Length: 142
Image (cartoon, helix red, strand yellow):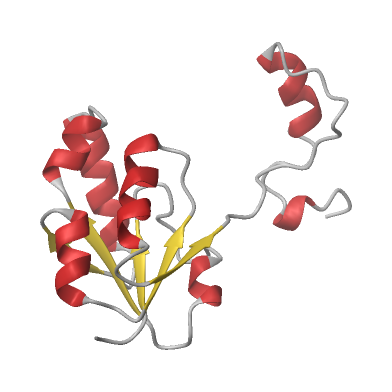
């Protein structure tokens, strides 16, 4: 087995994601370019180019192949992965639980909104959410 590993995916392509703080210092970060996974999600060429360009800005090794197979080959002791709500990704993570000690790392909230906020219409949601959007930790005083 190898050392701990960070497995990034297309929903967590920023250097400030909490997964980098959760993993031990010096942990290798990888992104596995899986064509069949991208086909399942029906990503356009434009989206794939955006993903690739974002990856080029990060301290990450880009590998190619089936995500589960590549992780099995690397055989990390611990695997740190940003959370995702995409069913194909969740299914893959279930498969990886048997390979390594899996740590799913939740992202920080984008906005802070009261639980009583009306969510049926975007405009009503956004009129509340924009007050804390793009502020560090949703801080209303920033």
